[in-house]
Every structure is written in structure tokens, then in C-alpha cells.
Length: 387
Image 1 (cartoon, helix red, strand yellow):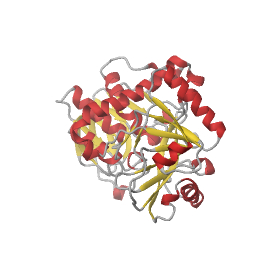
Image 2 (cartoon, one colour):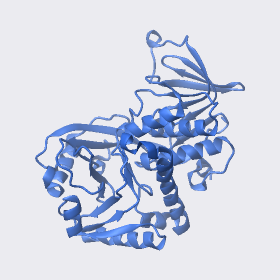
Image 3 (cartoon, one colour):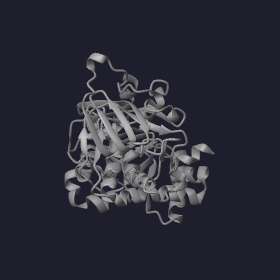
Image 4 (cartoon, rainbow, N blue to C red):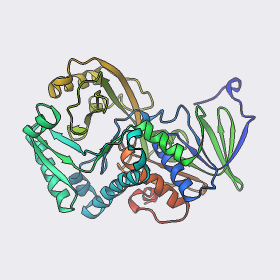
């Protein structure tokens, strides 16, 4: 975004040890682990809208293990050892959330009942069974379910079977993000969109539409919006839109959140009884890129048709909310952590590829490990882009 002289006020200057750019789950996670590392640090979070106003407040609230692909596809692409390392990283992410926020499960609406991945035909079911066999060989808890199980436990129709990832969880994503920031004690500046930043021998100067910030270092945690802050990210992360709708509530009937159609579509019943369903971006690939979060009739109709076909209990319920959200998909499907070339004071993390809640807390921890000179997993290091 560009700013008019008339609308810019930068006579205010604020100083911090670390400025985190982005008030979503990755920025909140980074601020949390920074404060845990050194309680004396003065940390600020600069957010262009409101806290969790981007993808962190527009997702489905799944805390899932793995990444954007089923485990068998991770093995095909990366080999067994690396695939398991990627899976373990996401398991650690969930473990850290449990460890650090167990005292406020009710407040953040954390529930751990696993997640289902459902198959609409025998071909998809065959792949899910292969996935389950691979997972079992690594002692990853997984259950194979049949059509009858799905109808009884989810009140879902027209699925031939599926598998259940037994360790997964769900959460209210905005409440989790805000709880992290609260625990971090970071000073938050909402509606401060970063226009530019400059590094010199004294630190980093950050210009927003409202003020000038000085910091010893800064962390870029804007995920899909990273290319707007530096050309370095133009070939590394891509803005991709997802769409969701939520119906009015009814009595609780679903055991756990669900994926369908090779993880392209997803749904869950919230603790309040509302049905949330999202996906179908594959129907309009050409329009589901960029930074507009508008909804489209084609995808919203597909979501409603999915409810009618697979979730008849909900088909006559009024739709209360429809929205879009902008996700950051990395070029290779994995998260990345690093520092800008030649800018030792400018760090970044991103590329969550539709799994931000399932990866960001551990990625934020890795971000802090990198800042303090500790080793991080090779598969998330941004140095892989230099090879």
C-alpha cells in the first residue's frame, strides 16, 4: 500500500528490542518464545489491521499434524526419514500448545478428539489405507473407519470410509492468538501497516502509516504478505484464498473435525453447535490468488451442495457467515525460517501452506532458536532456497 502525505503521521518514534511485524499466530508465537527466552526484552507487535485479522482469524481452527499432504505423499516426496521429521515437528507444535496453555483450555476452546480424513470413493479410500499403514509403521496413532462408523460418529453420508488421526485437536484460533500475545506481554500496535524498513549499524528503522519504530532487530511474520515487504519472497510464497461458511447451530453430533477430497475440503461442528465448512478453492484456481478476501458464488454454492450431499442434518440451517481468508503457500509446501540476505537484523518466518495453527507455535520457537544461534531443523531453514 502507498500512503498520502496527508494521511501519514510519523512524528512519533518508539524504541524496542524486537519489533514483530504481523499480529497473527506466527507473530504471536514468536513474541511468546522471545519473552520466554528473555523476560527483560521489550517486544512490540505491529499489525496492519486487528490482531488475528488475517488468516489466523479466518481459518477453521484445526490443529493438525503433518503438512498440506497426506503422510504417504510426504514419504513419496521426501523419503521416510524426512517425512517423519516433518510429522514430528507438527506433533511437537501441538505438544507445546498443550504444555504452555493447559491452564486455559476452556478459555481458548481447545478440544483434542482427533480429526478424520474421509473418502468419497474407493480410490481415495485406498490411498487413505496406505497412509494408515505407513503411519502405523512409525507408531503414529491412526484408526481406519468404515461407512457405518462415519454415519454414526459424524452423521455424515456418502463417504465410503476414512481414517482418523487420533492425536489432532481443534481450537478457537483468535482466542489462542490473543492468549499468546497476552502471555508474551508484547506491546501491540493495531492498524499500523508497515510501509518500509531500513537497517543500519544501529538497528532497524520501521516506518508505518502512523509512526516510526526503532528496534535492535525485527521479525517479519506476515506469511502471505511477505512479498509485499521484500522482493526476496516473490518466488518463495504465494497468496492463496480459502473460503468458509458457518451455519446457525444445532445439537452436537460430530465426534471431531473432518477433511474430505484429499484434504481440499474440511468441516467441523463448533462447541456452540454451529457447522463450519470450507474449501473448494480448486474450482476457481485462477481467482483464488492474490490479496482480495471476497467470496465467490461458485465456491459458496459448492460448499452448500457439499452440506446437502454429505451433511443432511445441516442442509436446512441458515447460513450466518461467509468469508474468505488469504493463506501463504510456500513454493515447496513447507514452512521456512531465516534472515534476509545481508540483513542480519531482519528475520522472517512463513509458508504455512494452510496449516498455520498446526505449525506456527513450533515455528516461532525455531525462529527464536535461530536468533539465539541454536540449530533449527534443516527442512524449515530458508537456506534450502539457496541451493
